[in-house]
Length: 211
Image (cartoon, rainbow, N blue to C red; front, side, top):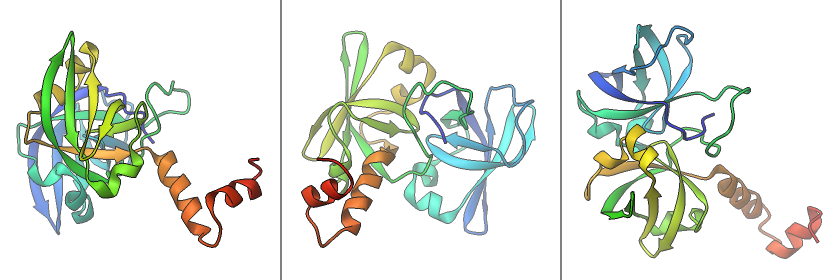
């Protein structure tokens, strides 16, 4: 479990294809003395398991499924990536609940300056538009962001100055791909409603105690 609050910008050191997946070496720029092999860590919003740690450099494995759903197929040595280690129960939840299970990739359509912030427009496939609401939460490359606007075919987020300094989003330009994870709460609500196919939403809510 993650919060979408990025800890560091890491650098991809090495990528090795292996049995349908990838072995990835990343220089995290973090002190990993208290971290262990087997720990979860999010790379551009993708939850991976560390298989080796040496100093601030760690190795993680991405499966074929992960590659197919994320931007990892485009990763190259030297690429900058967002790093977040798994949430501790004693930590503050500064962003929103992020699982690190990427739903899809989208394309940056537009990038403009808005005062001291940066406004980014990102494509939104019609099949996923139901998960995005204005002022709701969304994870873009693992960054917890608030949706400013939703229109047919896209949504917009506003990147404040602090976020521009500690994440890779300002390195993205129109045409670049980003990882998207939609709010887990909305997906669970959809699942619960769709399981009850014989009743409409109003009847379902009444039987669950909402009147």
